Structures are given as structure tokens and as C-alpha cells.
Image (cartoon, rainbow, N blue to C red; front, side, top):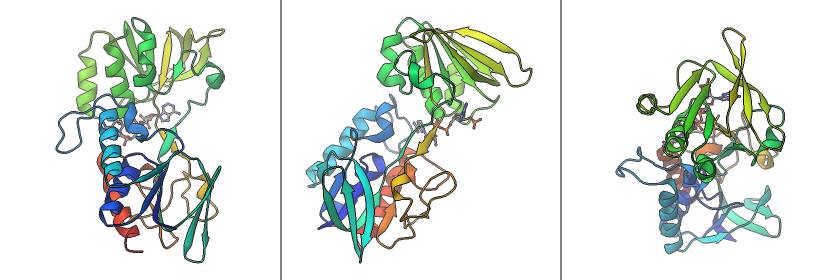
Length: 298
Ligand code: NAP
């Protein structure tokens, strides 16, 4: 029986581990992939207070080392179910069953797919959801980024350093991402904005060769020849395994307030998996601290 089990080792989960360990609790962190969460794919973090600039990977590594040094127990296992037995919380992974006094769910969110035909087939064959992971394969080539949030803008900036041409395809005229990033991109000679456009079709036999774009105002369809398409249109949560136990909202996010408390006593939701309006590194870290301190009092 652990004091606290944390599911997910992104910024929220690892921050929760640090706070719970510092509160003297035994902590098990379960992660199905690699630690760090979404931030590891961000080349430059420039808006975390007190740190002028750091790579997402470096940031995540720092968090992990800090938690490890404090005594975090870390296991690379996929959680398949969570249930309540009396006041005890039971977590089932593919190979083990664990028990805890309190749980912190920090499962984040996964990349939202475009939902266009042949997207799965061409993923890894010209389509990518991670510019920092796959950008190098497109050195000197023509690529496009879809999306108008910070991820798309940062991806475009990163790719513009290596690629011959970068197109930013966005379905509206204005951006959800920061003005500063938009301005910086506008000044780059090899970046072009294609606004009010959506990707309608993917072309290419075995690898992506072009996309058909539909102009939202005129309805006109045009062909854009590219070697790579980076999809950065936000995230969707992966909270299906908690649906029997916890209240989820219409988007699938766990319903919990700023205190991170869910509808079940002793279960907390932290970071991007929680219903909230601002999803930033700072708010993920803040959630991790709030959830862990709540969990430490159970
Ligand atoms: P986001 O802010 O939710 O933006 C998603 C973008 O994709 C929006 O521009 C949206 O268009 C567009 N979109 C959504 N569905 C689409 C579809 N089916 N087809 C075409 N376009 C679609 O997502 P994000 O950029 O991944 O960012 C997620 C959160 O992480 C945000 O809070 C962001 O600020 C944060 N973030 C922070 C940093 C940082 O602090 N360094 C870096 C990256 C991300 P509309 O605008 O028209 O809805």
C-alpha cells in the first residue's frame, strides 16, 4: 500500500511526485510511455517564470531527476483500470495491481488527429505530430504545419530553421497562439501563412506528396505540393478508463476544480487531463502541487 499513486509522468505528475515526497509520503509514479509528457516535444520554453529559456526535454529531465532524488518509485506500466475498494484506491496495470490511500491522475492528453482520409496510413510517411522528433527528416524540404495555437507556431519556427519552405495552414484569420510568435514567423522569408484554409485531402501513393486545401470563404480547392505535414491542432484527453468511476465533461476531461478534487474522495486530477481553461506548463505544475498537497492530507 503506497500513500500516493500518480498516473502519468508529465509536468503535472512529476511535480505532484516532488510535492508528495517532500510531504513525507511514499509515491509510486506509473507511466505508459516515456516520462516528460508533451513538453519534451517543445524545443524552446520561454514562458516558465524564472527560467528565461530551456528546452522541453531539459525541463522534463530536471523534474524527473528531482523526483528520483527525493525517492520516487517509478514504473513503466500501462494502467488499464482504477477502482475504489472501501477507502482504498486500486490501480490495475497490464501486469500488476497496486493499492494506495490517494491517487493523482495526470494522464495529460494526446494529439488530435485531422480526421482526413488516409491520415493513419500516411503517418510516418510524410505526416507527423511532432516537429522536434521528425523535423530533421525534412531538412531542405517543403513542409506545412496545420494549426493556429502555440504548438503549431512553435513547430513552424523550429522547422523554418531546417526546411526550405514552411507553410502554416490555419482555419481562421486570427491565431490562438501568442502574437509574439506570429510576428516572429511573419518576419521569416521561408514561412508563408495560408489562412482560412482546411486540409481536405491527402495526396501521394506511398508517401505524402501534396495536400488539397479548401478555402473556407470562397470554397475554392487548391493543391499544395509538400514533403511533410505536421499536425498541431490541439489535444484530446485519454480518460476513458476512469469513466466508470469519475465524472467527465462532454470533451472527456475529468471534472475537478482548482483544488483538483474529483467527485471521488482521495482522487485528484492534475494538468491537461482536468477540465480547465488554461493549459500551460505553469498551470500543469501548479495543479501537480495542489493535487499532491491535497493527496498528502488524505
Ligand atoms: P490549441 O491552443 O488548442 O490550438 C489548437 C489549434 O488547432 C487552434 O488554432 C484550432 O483552431 C486548431 N484546430 C483544432 N481542431 C482543428 C481541426 N480539426 N482542423 C484544423 N484546425 C484545428 O492547441 P496547442 O497549440 O497544441 O496548445 C495546447 C495548449 O498548450 C495551449 O494552452 C497552449 O498555449 C499550450 N502550449 C504552450 C506552449 C508554451 O507555453 N511554450 C507551447 C505549446 C503549447 P481554432 O483556433 O480555430 O480553434
